[in-house]
Image (cartoon, rainbow, N blue to C red):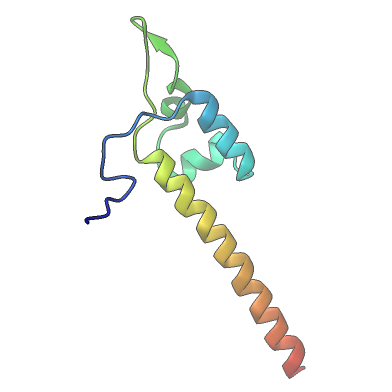
Length: 91
């Protein structure tokens, strides 16, 4: 049986509410996200806004990007803790 990645099949787009909630969970502002992704702040601010009766969609890459950002933050924390422990043992 072939296992498909959760991103290999067509997915629904993230809603603006989900996006804002995810940023809050990760303690990152829309401005910080804009700078991190090199996407204009105005573009990010327009995601989810209704235009011609349809919301401007949040791109599919945003959700996995935020998941990897979260993993990177956790890894940085673990690495920092390990380095501090090593230094305290040496010291």
